[in-house]
Length: 156
Image (cartoon, rainbow, N blue to C red; front, side):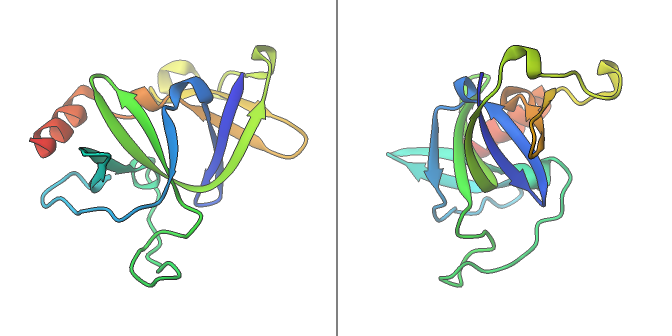
């Protein structure tokens, strides 16, 4: 299984490559008034307005406000946008510190250390190699149906 690895506030995460449509460099995001806190705004991607979700905020991290080299963004210059499909909409997810791709066998994926019922729906196991422990996320499960409805309303 190929995994795309990244970090958020120093925590290591991964997502299965087959869940990813595209990885893009950070771009200018247009803010959306009254959007949920984890929705940064929208981005025009090849003529389509797509919602942009800050994965760090969605996972409960506080976003450090620091400027990029150009001075106009709170995101680091190595920030990437991950294009995925959630239900019937395409969403861009902000990733910090994109590391690259690694390959793990299915046997190397472990269950979480707590019962499945106590885990968030977006957790899809963990993998460990000699250098890091990665929590695998299911991007399609990051938002509840109610949260997806909020994003759909924001797009309209």
